[in-house]
Length: 230
Image (cartoon, rainbow, N blue to C red; front, side):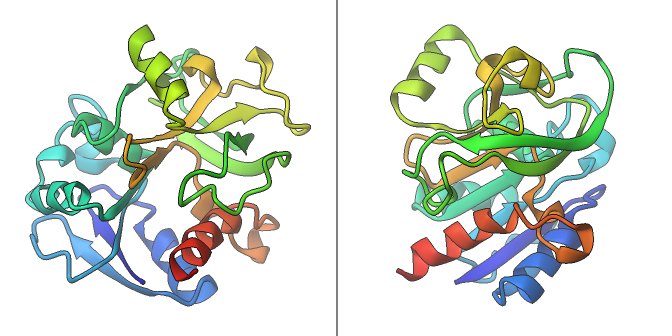
């Protein structure tokens, strides 16, 4: 499998993703400049975290119109895999490749800390190998990460198995107290109906190296690779 990491002006987690995929997961990976249109035959496209275009207007609102996004649309429509992390998640919702929106955190402050999340099910590429009883410790770093959707959309997300992760405590309990940013129903990650486009606010690439004393995030990347290679 070949991975591509899109670099927008203001991306700051592209290096983290590239490093984890290449050096820890031993995968073929290339960087894709946002003004280019060629996806270089990548099978899986990542939109990394950061502050694309300085987060002017709304987070992800300008990056959604970058030249490369036209082919990201086409890639997704053909069943290709696309995943956005943090700012990448915001871009995918702005592009309507994923449902819902990411609003300002309920405390109106930028939050940067470790949180816990648990997978909702094993019926997606990125959760296929995760332990549903385990609370994974993954960092967040965002000011606009509060997931919002109208009631009908929320019902569809639950009914279709499109909710991937929910914020929880260290014991795996999903509660208001464990909600990191005020997201509706503690939602930390979702996918599209076809389950080939994914988005999450926490940063698994920042929890994939023993030097950081946390490798919980590596399990998500392992799920992707093992499922595809199976």
